[in-house]
Image (cartoon, rainbow, N blue to C red; front, top):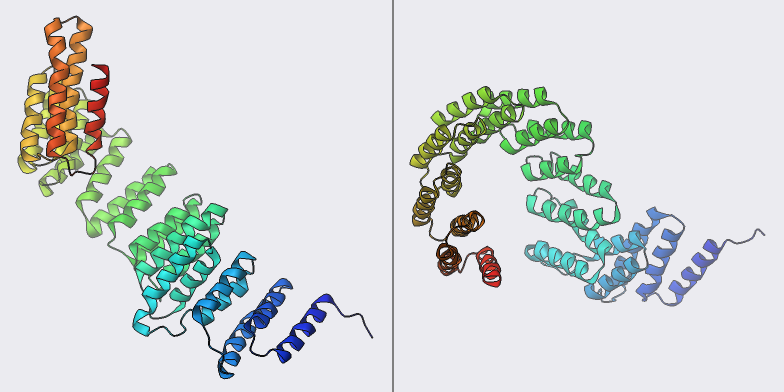
Length: 409
């Protein structure tokens, strides 16, 4: 007789053990692990499926938690396929249909916390393979973000891409702007494939501003300004938005075509009067050209239509200061704070203006009295700002500056 291989010998031992102890699940699971060890992955599914049905028929209680612990043990021992099959067969055991999704998502989070990453992955796979949930964008996003964190950390970026490709299939979430953009971002290093994906994304979402802008950014990154210009022109013809017009103008601006950028921005101002960025950009271009007066005119015009725009008020204050008129800059910031009393950035700008004026006086040898007064004014402004903005998330910007000035006073 021929020599029996270790695999065949182990298989025989497990078969005999199962005959003697037919109610013992660990024997079935060990058998599945044996198949995984020798690469017979197709048998793992059959063994786990049969184990659950056979034990249940024999009256053995199928305790969900006990089986999930077996999956975790398999994960820790690097039996990924066995782990996955246990999860697939047991995850829905004794779970009401209306409670399934939340229970499964909670299971995945619990596995992540315990470090059982392959168990969590198996749960997400089970969810997205269920037709009841395969069209849910939120589920795919959670799964993709999971892979982004855990697969990418082990240099397995292709696993993230694979999940996202499945996510945007027509029968899943083919209309999801967020998932298409996430996939394109993962393929950024491969411009040809990224371009192909963005073309598919645009076909699935023809009116998506974000997808058009992502395609433009890809072309600009690869020095294809002519293609970027054409993409924007086509988009503006079919579904023009303020953001697309703005991006078109910024493209021309970045290429040094200031006259064309100004022409586009002026047209944008006529169509989108309440879009502050048009006025801001026009002011910045005129300042770049050296015409501070015209820059101020554009920003002032923008404030008539956008009186609460923090960006416009700050830009106007900067223009006044650069024009040598700090008093007017101070006045603009005061007016801005009347309209936006709880905006941290406006209080910070006011304090920084006074600090710059103090430092300028110090360097130019101004009177000692004036030098002494300025830090106190800055601290007073900061104290008022902290009081007004005490419940704002970025108020620490003010407290940090206050501490720095008091420390150097």
